[in-house]
Image (cartoon, rainbow over all chains, first blue to last red; front, side, top):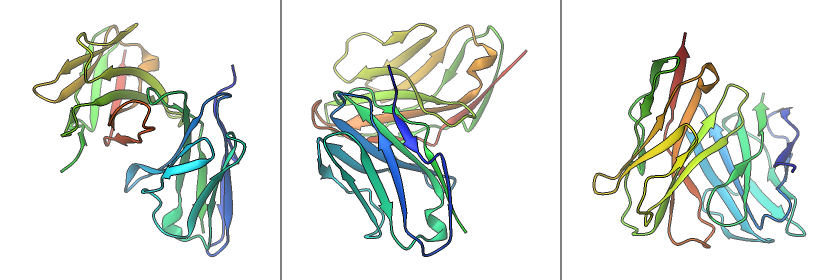
Length: 112
Length: 117
């Protein structure tokens, strides 16, 4: 079956612009997670969704970051007024239970 | 304190040999899960193996096995009969809390494995 998909695969944006990153989880997976992978910080948790609600937003680094999930499926991570330190690979994962999480290919964000 | 520690930034192994990648963890929660993921140069995170804190036996999945030593808080990954395609970054991760809680994963810094002919 189809795995987790993410778009775009690569995004280059200018400092100060807003960006939207999309995640399409595995069909039927109720849990959805966003992580960020950067050279200096490794893999960091950002936010978790169960259905359309986000019980854990503890990893969002600032109020410039937000995410939503609609219809219990697709999720969008929005970064406003991007900064160079936002450059990273943004990974989305989904799971049916809280056992293994299945990851998408990621979106590489470069802020110039 | 680091929740997940991987002390080997890089490892080399000869093809067809076995290799052990180290992982220690720190939690006070009695219920937790330990995971290993593989990240090849393509960037995708591939789930390899899972061990629950209450599991009595070590997890195995094909050539992968997890050497779970609860008292020592270690969860080392053993790859048997290494193949060239095993060359990748390997991450150990932990989920704390009871299942069904939708718990985030905390990752270690990874071990870069290189399989040589």
